[in-house]
Image 1 (cartoon, one colour):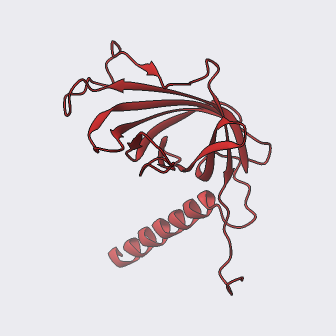
Image 2 (cartoon, rainbow, N blue to C red):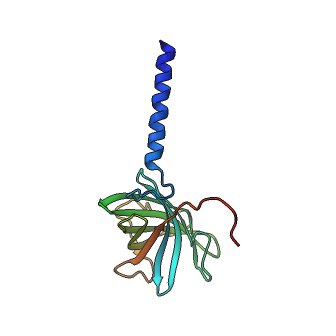
Length: 186
């Protein structure tokens, strides 16, 4: 009897796991109608110029980002940034709001200079393979290395990044899709 109960419990757990993985899968041709997944994100900072990022939106309300600026990615860059940590929530049937937080460093000395906070509003296309939106960027400076103010303190003084438009930067994204393995193309 115990063996049979154990067998039923294991079979039930396996079935639930298979159904959960299938429900969350974003395989070829799937249409999730959800924001979670990996996206190629672009912040359009000027005509013909955008800063790229790879964004993974998790269904649990968190986001991980690898920014094109993480390692001083632009020629003449005056700063470098850490990995980006974010949270998100639905704001409508096809829209989300997100807040990101990360460290900034002097590109020459590598010294910690402060925090940056980015706030985004994104709206998915009808097929949830693209999005458009707006991103606002603010900094919180550290007066001395390793003596930064608390970025979660409501009294913290956040300053728009230099050149930040009052209406925010336009952003766009496209969902990363599976490219089947096979022969290499020249």
